Image 1 (cartoon, rainbow, N blue to C red):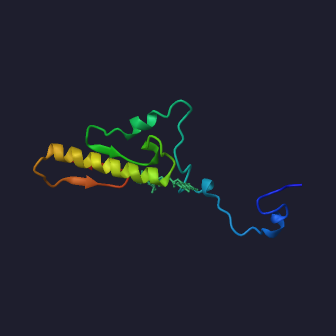
Image 2 (cartoon, rainbow, N blue to C red):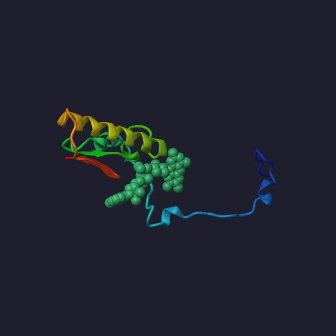
Image 3 (cartoon, rainbow, N blue to C red):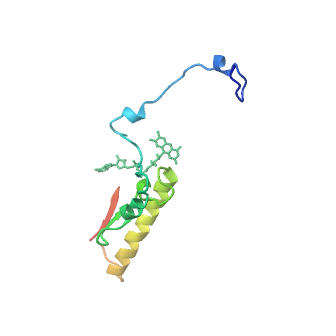
Length: 108
Ligand SMILES: Cc1cc2nc3c(=O)[nH]c(=O)nc-3n(C[C@H](O)[C@H](O)[C@H](O)COP(=O)(O)OP(=O)(O)OC[C@H]3O[C@@H](n4cnc5c(N)ncnc54)[C@H](O)[C@@H]3O)c2cc1C
């Protein structure tokens, strides 16, 4: 006999309603990152800007909130801050030529 929080006969009261198969959808793929055992430090390398011109965000770049929506959000703010700081260093008085794109941010 099975005992559950809602009683052992709870299964008889449940009917299938809807299900998803997101792991088989081409537009989603594997959905979020997974570091190999012992390789979690690679996330910090993934987050490193390239030549102070390209800036990376996304859950995979977060040091501890990876695989989460809030980790993705925070990494986006971090990447934007890095891009703005690099832009200000390059153009202390401000100038046009700042690009923000989805996925990666670049400055000219
Ligand atoms: C089924 C499921 C349930 C989840 N549940 C939760 C939950 O309950 N709580 C939680 O915190 N997190 C949850 N997550 C995880 C969360 O959704 C992800 O961690 C988060 O969405 C990652 O955000 P991201 O911006 O890093 O990447 P993504 O959301 O994957 O965004 C990347 C974007 O880049 C686009 N892209 C890819 N390649 C290119 C290219 N070459 N050019 C242009 N665009 C490109 C993609 O189309 C996509 O829009 C869940 C994920 C899944 C799949």
